[in-house]
Image (cartoon, rainbow, N blue to C red; front, top):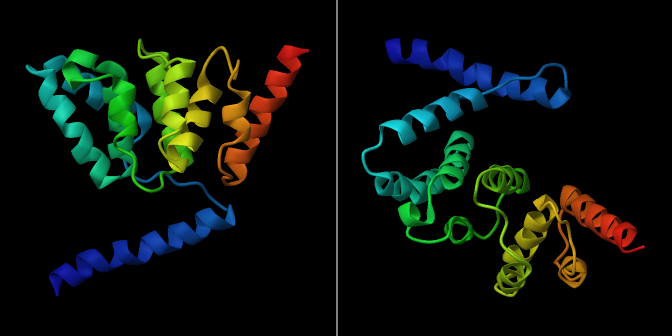
Length: 184
């Protein structure tokens, strides 16, 4: 009976907060905030005696696929070296992908990595990536959207990417528009 009394209010509260959030009446934050995740990551990186052990956490965190787990993956990929990971951080990232991934998460991780010393790979790498699968083609487009130099000579890669949701198509349109205005 005690377990029922303890668990029931929490089980009732979550659906109600979901309904309120969807109606736009209130905003809620579940779990850890970004500053807390950054503090945790900093602590892990500072106190780890072997960063290769941290690299081994990345696939396990990705498999859990929680918001905090994915945020931590992005921060680790941004701060671990190729030596720590055993390969280029971008290779590590793309090999984590399942059949579909949340666009916002991929953008957030890629932006975090690009802000670090792990800049978005070159055109040749992005073209090779896009040739592997439809998902990787779409994600290559997202990576292009984050680069400082923009689309450059990759307009064909952008126009031939498989269709995506509303946000994906806005990103594609913005890339094509900015590339055309830069060419003019």
